[in-house]
Image 1 (tube, helix red, strand yellow):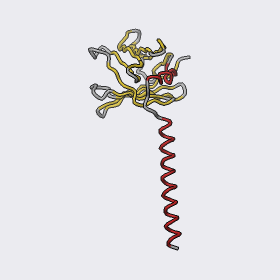
Image 2 (tube, rainbow, N blue to C red):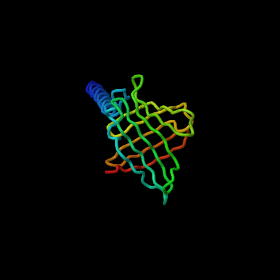
Image 3 (tube, rainbow, N blue to C red):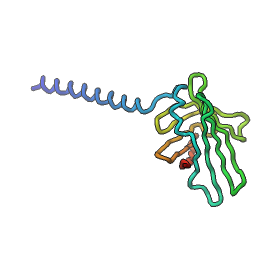
Length: 165
């Protein structure tokens, strides 16, 4: 009887190891470290995105266009009535074998590059851990709704957008 129990335990360990390996492989297939050629995977971003949940009398949007096979260009604009209160230039580019999200805002002397660290069919994460804020930018698509989240050093700000037809 002891020999049967030993064999049974051995088979259960093998089964558990195989199951964990399988689950790891499924998870790994859904999230990969992006490469420069993956810029095609962010084409869903192209278009006009209106921000939801803005204060009364304000509006905001992002617009993305494909500039070339190697670059998307975007603009983020916030308005108070008809007055522009914030503008940022945005780009997603292939560079040095990787993908980068580049933000150009007036608060920074130079545009800031964030390297893509995750890319799925429904979003991406990019990071620049040396930048003051944000250190991480995440875009997540769900249907026609886009959530952009900036975070770093315990702070997080999320913005929701709906795609304009």
